[in-house]
Length: 298
Ligand code: HEM
Image (cartoon, rainbow, N blue to C red; front, side, top):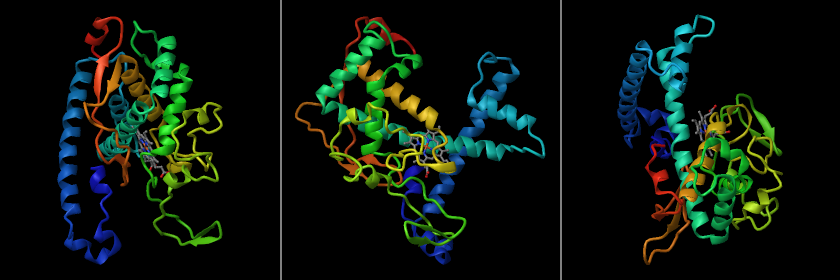
């Protein structure tokens, strides 16, 4: 879905040709949307069945909350099934590729910096312990991991041009007139590597974030991997947690090495979502003291 979204589509540049759908983008998108719709229908059906049987009432998941909102909605605050499904689609499109690519870049950068890996494992051993699994509650106590995550989002922002924006009024930015209705891309990738802002900008150095001078709140126009303003990432709280939790778990549970004779290539492939050009292949070796810990369902 995100690959299709990022294809430069002739129909966008020449709307008169949209009817022909020369590249077949609209056709492919319609097929995908139908597949997702079916998937959502079955998820919603399953959830409603469980709710009717009173299963899982003690803790509410996101879908349960949305279904409740829909049932309670009225003319003033309507939430239709189509809007509910659109929210689920937003979460999938916005939240899957972005996070998984960030994790892949994080693992690749960490694997080529043994001192970073060692510091992360030391922090995790102190906070979590080698005979213990990573819990969400540990996340706030891992400042070095947080700095690593921020440095990954600086060097390899998963949405390097943010999302396309469109001014509702003509405005002037930095002396340039931006006409109403134009399509504006913000090159956050370049801002994050601007040598007038960052010392040795291409160097992976998590320490630069240890003083907490830069955060991801969107108020700092030198560093905003989640965008800024009212259309900034809607999933930032979840994204930060998921990203940190996943990297913490991978690093704490395993040592990592490359397959024999392989070298690590960090080349990026540009698109709406930034990806690694060559997928990372890495071999894990368990490192926790108790093998039983690997048999748990996570
Ligand atoms: C590392 C992970 C993530 C990064 C770096 C990221 C980054 C971004 C960026 C840059 C934007 C566009 C903001 C703008 O143009 O100003 C965005 C939008 C969005 N993101 Fe994320 N995102 C991540 C994960 C997630 C997750 C996990 C979710 C949901 C579960 C999510 C949901 C959304 C949604 C719904 C929007 C559209 C917001 C709107 O248009 O109002 N994102 N994200």
